[in-house]
Picture 1 (cartoon, rainbow, N blue to C red):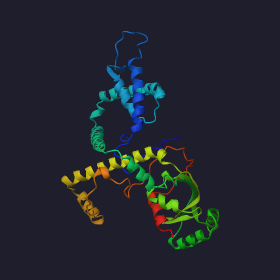
Picture 2: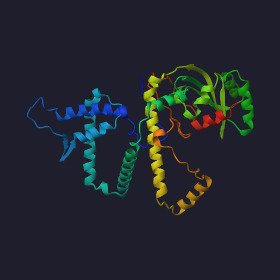
Picture 3: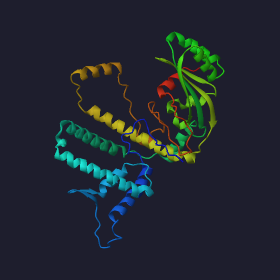
Picture 4: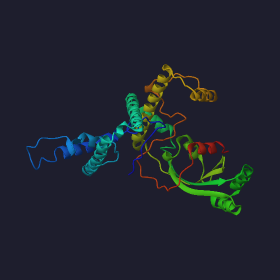
Length: 359
């Protein structure tokens, strides 16, 4: 069984949305704490408990430092806690030795190091604030989860696994119409590839297998409506990109299995929306003044991309369980992994552009 990480279009921090990981972390940290703090009890029953894991010259490395590093590791199983803790400790010892030597050489006063430290401090504090804001997002209700399931059959009840063939062709603008006509008359991609080779076109192709949740969400419904053998023809600055649906097979998921993924997905979206709205509010109430060349660049950006008219957002507790147009990630289901190869699908924008041009 494989668990894919579920993301939305914007997530303020990679450690923010991990409810199941928290349980795993608790087990791991508990195991490490017992091993390190009570490790000497068998040899000497009256020995006092200590939070010190090692001493490097006059400095101590504590259990808390080990636990903090372990907390950043998502896929650590409880049975791996002991060996992982020892490895972390060895790395912390090496780090402490380097830190002590750097202090002797006053490297911490180097202007570049000071700048990096300040940048890290700003980033950590800002992220902590955004995490705090995101924690106010309410969980979706069972009714909202069901509504999302019913509204997205291509992801769940009519879920499919798709086999694609992709070809990128280098071509001049005057060759585009001929390529489009040849693709329409070819019985399959092999015949089209033979045409490209015979006419000395430079091209590269690959085959990929993707399940519904691995496709761009904005394009999924259009992909689901494609018939086997149908192609998407997209004109690019360097030529054309062609994606052909070689085959598809049905692999539905029922609501019970989809519910955890949908719940987490909608919660992520609400957290993202809370953070996004808070940052917009902060900007609107702050005085931001661009200076020098940045002022001119900002004026050009505003002129080229005027802000959309303001709309009053609905209350958070009644947000419709759907995504905005910019979001591309879909709920990632806990199902048997879809066999894929190293090929990659074209980007969301390219695929969507080609789908819009289909008749």
